Image (cartoon, rainbow, N blue to C red; front, side, top):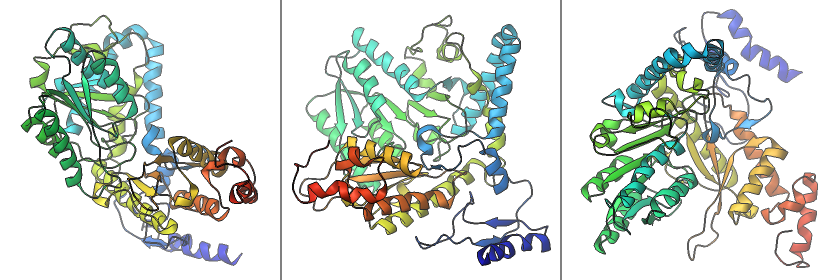
Length: 500
């Protein structure tokens, strides 16, 4: 009762006495978190005057009130989020289609797609709207680029053994596209390794430059480079401008930047990056509904490359913009909500840049809090973080494979209602007591301090209970007090160290 009385006077009374001031509870705020000890969950209140035109914390929570209650959603990087106002716009577009499809497909759709492409063009600072095509996903955009490389082998423009260079952490679906198009046509793949945790941009640049020059030194022709802007797992911001520059200096013919996580997460400027192709999802960090993405093709490249959508329809041969604008009868509504998304983003102080900065600052602070609580470290320096941070897990959890990582992810989701990605990192040769398990935490404007406390406390509970991923099948749905019992046979050597 005493705590409730304190909370009443701390939170409600100032609002009654000073109704013209805006009061913000810093703990669940989208703007920033106060510096807190990792055991401190006490609410703190600050008084701050702000323009009435900016969105309030209450309005933010209302925009995302459709999220499932009681879930710590700190995995925004996987599937993104969409506010209620944008969902409403999506439904209006869907109704327009269903109300009068002939008029929609002939008139509304082309005009709406052009308007959305114009929004994207301004967002990424492209020179011309004709350089921007809308697609459903980065995977589709990657297929468009790689398909023309496959035809280059078939038509004799590329020679067998010509190479694509990429980092070892390149996204799995992109690697599969490289296999399906580039390697199957006769190409060769160069995978650039790097050490994780990452300590600087220089080590990434040096590894890339060394691998590229080594292959050129043995006569390998490198036709294509595939570079992440923000890597998925493990996650950090690549020095993309420097890497593209190296490719140009070393004679790599085409550079494709996979920026699935970039827009809404980091600054994106085509005139600074200078890549030939750049593709990003808009549903991950830019509040669009799934699924909508874009492919940027530099105009000088488009004039001499034969680019086509992998789905062939009526506009085949009429240019990539037209081909991507019509790939058969389907729901194009997610393509059309970009103006509504911009309206939502501009309700925030600083717009898209302000959201990016606040998310970055908050996720770094939460990452440091978790690392301190677990006695571990971040996966990269704060300046290499986006709105996602890798945090080492206690080694005693025994994350020793990708399978262990998937099972721990499932346990956290089902037992603790925490949605977060788990990463297994191969230890370095000779490394003593390596950290092989990491969580990738994300911060988006709807997140609260309690979300990260729940993850912290769940991991701490597993550590206290002596939990180990090697026994996960036995222990997954048992009460926490039984985890130690599950481990006893292994502790005393009764059974070999294998999973059930």
